[in-house]
Image 1 (cartoon, rainbow, N blue to C red):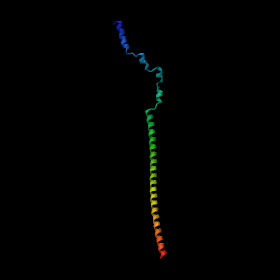
Image 2: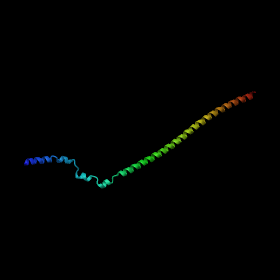
Image 3: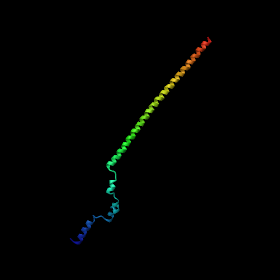
Image 4: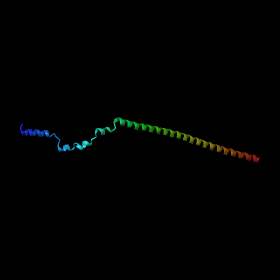
Length: 120
């Protein structure tokens, strides 16, 4: 093999090597130093931690829902009692009106009777 062939063969192999431009996108020493260490990673939350926190949030939501449901039930009960009271007051007002009309009727009849007695 001649020297020229050897040089051509070396150049062919070098074509697959990274160029300066290719190396610019690789991480630098400073970039590598900035990566998280094992100790840094240990400080991150584990799946169990996240599951526990999620369960705490869900339990609190459930508790809040139960409190709201109790308050809604209580409010519905109060509203039902208020409706019953309003209905009772309406009936009482109607009864009072009927009694007042009857009293007026009785008074008119009494006046007629008194006139007849006085006139006779």
